[in-house]
Image 1: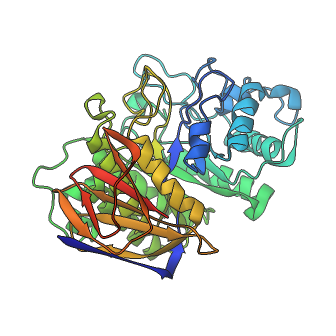
Image 2: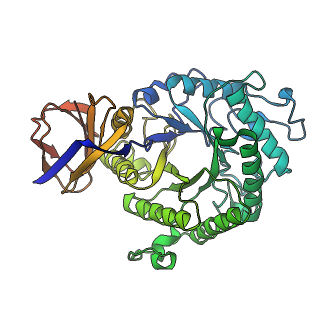
Length: 443
């Protein structure tokens, strides 16, 4: 039997938004499924890959809003905000802020013909277009809004492939992206200052360090079975080159975003490397966002206890790093191997949705407190400012175990493929938690 201890009097800091999502559950223009974000206290929804969502090529992407690049970027009539206004407004009404990616949706047919993933013809004009998009949503420009949308990300995964002609996100060189980031980040910060946070570059991942960790200053054994993807070397070169460039050109960087489709332990290793690299290069205060991640991104795992529990473990373990935000890819409703939170046939939540809802309960309380377990279980605990509400999320991805505790007066809610955060009997003294189960304890 393992033991669990929590000290609700010892506040460690804040519960961070590690349960944010990418691609919200958006169908049509009614926002009828966004209540799932509200109920789970989901704080942010990243809007990458929304460009081709329901309704056609009308949402979010810069060329969907500014359709003729030769038009006058200072003329409100050059912009079409119609559908994006509906999306952004419905999200804000749901209590979930947009995390706005300035760029384009992925084009998986790049080898046939690229359309919108070609570098802008004029980087300075593109930056001014982005300025007006931000001004529309933050300052009311062009009959817009005054929404407090703080995160503005410059493009996505420009490192996706080493050869531009194969890259479904950026048919250009890495040097071209560095220049675009340089010009756009400086322009946007000059326009809006610290009222917004600008960053990028949505790295495809740094899996290359897992094959040779000592080369990158990581004290751990190399993978016994090296990850063979030929893109890994490109990912690392792009990452190192990006920071060399922005440091030399004094580019602003409020947050660094990166992606992981690896398991929990390897994602933590990559995170630690990023923390180390940023610290050593003078970016120790920059927010780190894993704004695409999915550790069970196959149809075989969809709706399984494995997917739910490992997602829960990912959020808890990453919460213990310097990572500030995570955005699960993704929360869409419909046919997608990545859409792991909702049943694509019934549109109802799968069990993987409920760890996000459980951690959302802690996020709503606000304050992280000290907790520890000496067995297979990992945990995260919180208390509200007034001390009235207390909560704990525990998850076990190893062997079944009984957890000894002193938690009388708390209710227990079980999460696995057969229990959608359903209340179970709990005496406050012993919690039985099986492999691939998570539990929310709340008073």
